[in-house]
Amino acid sequence: MQDGWLVRVPASSANVGPAFDAVAVAISTHLEVFPDGDDPAPETHPAVRAFRNAGGRGPLCVRSRFPGGRGLGFSAAARVAGLLAVDAQHGRTARAARAETLRVATELEGHADNAAAALFGGVVAVAGRHVVRIPLARDLSVVVWIPEHETATASARRLLPEQVTFEDAVFNVGRTALLVAALAAGAVDSMRVATEDRLHQNRRLARARDTHAAIEAMLGAGAFAAWLSGSGPSAAGFADRAEAPRIAAALPRAGRAMVLDIDDEGAVIT
Image (cartoon, rainbow, N blue to C red):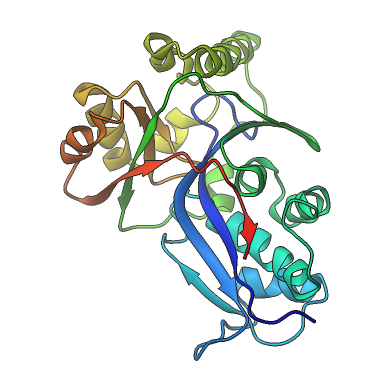
């Protein structure tokens, strides 16, 4: 058994508009787990549950720089961290454990997008167990707006229809393809259109008018794109690095605005 380790996992913003359960971006605020500390996490914490599920022994301490229940991939980051903590105990690296960690985290989460971004870093496209990092032709900042209230993912998913029209499906397929191409080509002028959505955002934003206002404020201040982060209620957007602080300052005062980087490293064990 190895001592003196720490697992560090980034937050993530999923869906990125139209790419429901298919695209996510890792962002530079983190959750950490480690074995030695004065305040071990309770057994009910998702990191500890994942840790025990994978055979982890002993106490597990958790420190998070971002809140849960806000659409920033907290449960995925916690579960990935708990699973990797077992690998840390046995001296394995996060990279060597990626495939199995993604499989188990996806089973626990019910979808792979946040877990894949947390593990691999960058912007990822996900289909089943296949994960591909989308190459980025331009350096982008991520502006995040986080309100005080929470949204439960399960209740947010119950707002979604069981069937969608063929027209809406085609709309989202086209926007998702454009999103991947725009990121890879650095086509920032296409990103706003590429993050339009007809599957989930409008239904969710109808109950989160403050988030809708934050998205409109981001776009109005010059963000390349803005979207409902995961199931919300946070909003996220891509912006030019030099303009990001000004865009963040233009967001509603009812929430906390942050300027973050895209986390290129993903989950690590140190």
